[in-house]
Image 1: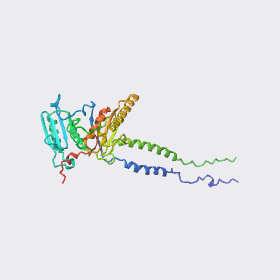
Image 2: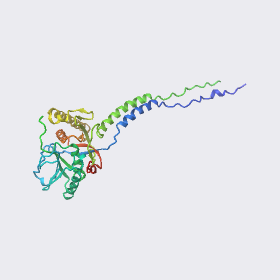
Image 3: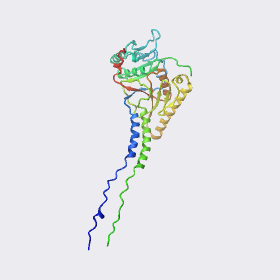
Image 4: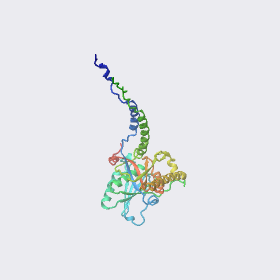
Length: 177
Length: 172
């Protein structure tokens, strides 16, 4: 007598499919995500470039007076912070083409040390319209704040002076050699 | 004849633990590298950068050397190596010499890389400075950078299209 095969013989075990163990992966992500979030940059960082193709020539000059060949064509934007009578006062001074335009600090923009950037912006725009130059020299006194310098260079560049030459004013620093 | 069926064991679950170990090690290296690169384009902690309208791109073939100027300390390189105080920068010749030496070494390494790979990378100096420090220190640093053959110098800032208008507002 032939018996039919038992049904349980061919019956596969109905086990649930194997799931990959994601616990270590999740642990890793939980560790990394807060770390990555801490290094996320919210603010947009910008760069202001200056080129010193001739090493030493830009930074070694005194930069105070306008002598030498081509001086008439050169525009000098002097940034001053401290007051020294009539010649030095807190503010800007633009020299060039035989003119000198003072822009004294005002009581506006106290958060910006009183520098009248609006007036500087307007004058730089007028100069660019009247004189087609791409170059401007920024002469900065030692006690001027770095923020003021960068924002002045920023205005020069945004008004069509891509070549900004940085010149420190002829003041000696320290005595350490 | 009775046929014997061979019983196959259920396929073992793929162990991803080893894979995760490798990934962990890789991620640590990658994150370290990313953080070094991102340092150049992020705002350093406890530093207030000036705001600007314009934003210029870094040279395509530029390799930057980072210098951070805090009111009390100077850090050089992406590893933030302390390089003295601002006062030492202008008063101490040894501090200036050390900075010059560091920059010259960095420039020489870039030159060596160019020679080895036939590339044309240019050394660029990236200055990240607090906006409250005075320009005498910036001037000194630029002099040192120019002395170490850094022709292109970049200042880090925060892009803000409205800072000019904000400067016109009278603080009450």
